[in-house]
Image 1 (cartoon, rainbow, N blue to C red):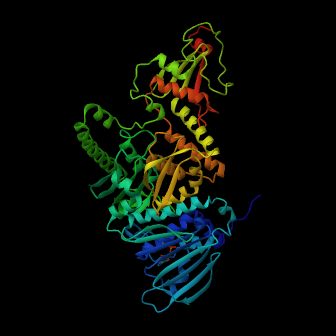
Image 2: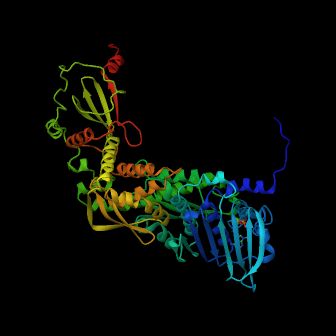
Length: 597
Ligand code: ADP
Ligand code: MG
């Protein structure tokens, strides 16, 4: 079938272009707030309903728009910000493509109210399905207010891609947070369904704004970066190795005040931390790179989320060098502290990351000489009884059919690679992943405790954990579930939660770290999982956090306790992430390897 070529109608062309700029409510919030900043607004208010899916309103006290220009706002390639292509290199503005308003108007209903300070009357314009249906005089204070409703009403396929309201709201808050970090002089506020969920009064400088947004925990654990290399400048803050996050969402990069993503800078940062933090943990960082306009191309991504550097090697080296120096400085002062402590404390102060676990807690000497009696007594079984004894007929263990792990006829032989517990039996060898095993035990305990309204321990001193407003809005949805398993949290203001009680099912975890990791996980959400899936994810994330880590030495009694708990646990052969908890080698397989069979 061959069709003739036809030029698309302007409406369809705009909708296609909108696909790149307007992905979800948060992209609209970003474009509108950027326009408000470009217009010189010093007080920017965002109001959203139902995560922005029902309505988004952004008001500013900036320059306003002349009535004659109002119609042009919604034309594609109409902008007041550049004239020549070279202008984009030194445009101090966010916008220059003249695309956002046209795109938004093509997929939603837009009402614009605007007035310049010198004009007696303002203007109201209404745009429906990309067409201006009304332009009339209106009274209002100087500035601009844009209201977007009926988002994607005319492109139902796009609506389907929207996630839960909580997720969309959190993405809107993330968008404002990023802009607020780079513009401390501007006051920002966000209301969601009538409630103030974000408020950043004008701040004296970036340091104050960062403290306001990332909270006290980060402020207490931040290292300052201020370095130059030729014409590139890097300023900002990174966390000390003692304060890590479970994902990279607390890392913010700005290039000439614009929030961007950049793999190469990210790599430079993470590589610098690699030696000092645990694998799969991330630092927090807010870093501002400033360089002359002609050194960086900002026109390589429709939403301008990526940039290209002329001297990318120089940028990499600057980031990597500056972060390494900051970390080395922190290390030097930490060693100085450690040196003043007694030798034993000094060793543990600098060795780092061990957090207590119930198994760990059962022995204060994890490197215990292995004691058979201990383990045997503890497990109450015959874990050692038949070590090396040939009286049980050797049979081929069928690893794939055995659905539960039991420790009958198994002998604990030791820990391998800091992570795998090795057991021998007359039928073969079994390797048990200590983290995965413990994770499964804790998950099943949490699930059971949810059914029966779990016991919890009230904290003597309730702990306050500072979070970002975006994180708070995600956490809110999970509060009833968390209370159900005994983790009692109260939202406290707009940027903190108070941990009042900890679940009995998760002994020996630090409340602050548990909550902060949980929130990181919640904001990792991809597609809209069902309620049950979300529940499962939350419980799994708590279990993962509280489980003993890989690379932790376990004493014999700790191993025994772990085995005993695992035996009692349902689904004990796979971890909550679906990875196996144990791997087995049959005696037959081993003998084959030695060419005995
Ligand atoms: P761009 O920002 O790339 O110029 P937009 O489509 O976002 O393109 O906006 C088009 C034009 O509308 C802007 O160049 C600006 O002149 C005007 N405009 C949009 N929002 C505002 C606002 N809040 N205050 C003043 N002018 C605005
Ligand atoms: Mg714009």
